[in-house]
Image (cartoon, rainbow, N blue to C red; front, side, top):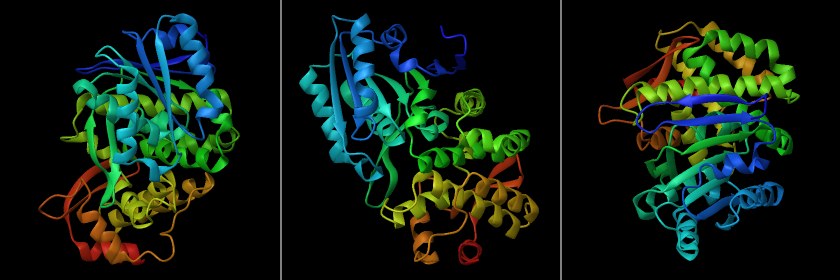
Length: 363
């Protein structure tokens, strides 16, 4: 094992391990250790596959020359997270002749992980999936916890399944190939963990912001591991989002509405969550749950990481609230938000008055 590898164990009913280090996509023994059968499908997108797919295929094949390894690639971008592309992955599994002990390797960001994971959940009612996240956002959030889904016209992630991965292998060297905007977007989800459960982590991020943005390997690994520890602990206690896991949606009710209203062609997910977290902090202050000063500190930290903090021009508050009514976190009693009492102390608040939400959006 690489001496710099950080490992996070995820417990619960379907335990697995997260490995975090540079160079892991070349570790054939590690990749192959999770292939129980003879069929492997690497699923990637048009941006990531040219950079990393051949490495994974070669590393896996070097240890398992008996395996049938196929590659399925679809167009990059949130707009590709569709039922049609889900069908494409299913067709690729069928063409491979994938048996119940086959494994899907999801190589890419959150879109690839969600789509490939959903296909793995559905093929023969569930086969193994190894998440190989190549974006910061996927490493600290979407690859961990087993949520898989696709988007439909009415909203984000409305069709999906809970399907924990067999393993998560985060090769931090892939972050060097990320466009700067994508790296910054990932820090929104990192900041989220400080906002919901760990105020001390927020301070650590304030101190180390410049080095993190410069892709300091050691600090990046520390930030990823710290984020994964928090997510793993929460998802282990609440695997199907019946309670505490909802805290991970801090900023997401607003953020998903912004993404959907822009047709998934404006702010990316991390950017939308950044705006959403600030709106959630302001709604918390408007409801007199929290001090407005905490929201200002959050705004300054998001801006330090180059993230947006205002609702994009041209979006109507009423249209965003209409999107929120369809959000998975909404309930019959009204809109439900993850808000905070202060930095590091979030909670779920149900039945929020739409008029106050509209005021915050217009503010």
